[in-house]
Amino acid sequence: TGYATAGSLAAVAYSGACIENITSSVVVSQSANKVGDSIGGIIGKVDEISTTVNIIIRNCTFNGTVYARNYVGGIVGSANAVKATNQTPVIIENCTNNGNINASSSIGGIAGVLFQTSLVYDCVNTGVISSYYTSGKTVYADQDIGSSSANPRLGYIVGWASDTAAKCKVTFYIDGKT
Image (cartoon, rainbow, N blue to C red; front, top):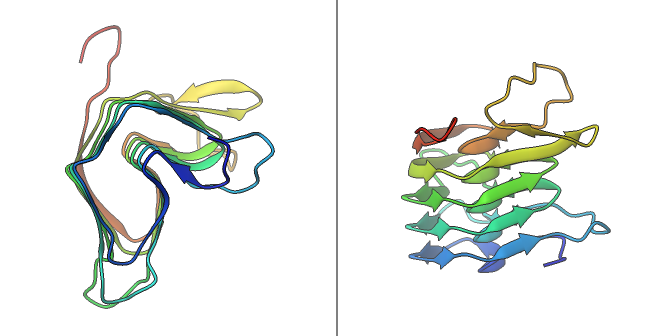
């Protein structure tokens, strides 16, 4: 709690990391006076510094709550990958977010932001994804908020992505029904 980059397991994971079979049910939060970003239920930030070694996050589940500012996800806050030919440096697979994620912008059930080449597949989000971005009013991932530049970038799986492939399942509840 309180750091600029944080996760329940680790703030940052680097090249070669293999994070598997982690379940967390804690509250991860960021102090109001911190200026950094990248807060995740499991890992705050994935920082790929090699073009030859992948980072793998597999079979992880988050059941807690995350309160933060930007680049916020149920599994990973942000993934900064090196783009290499025929390389997929960040792989997130078979992960589940059941937790509630509330932040300002770039918020996703699995990842807040994925930069460069990343692969997300067979992931599930059942948690509530919300933003307090717009004038203190809370908006949710299933609301139509238009296409203005003030869009807080909410996503059930990924809040915002660049050069990323995803194959995931989204389960959400409306009026008590799946």
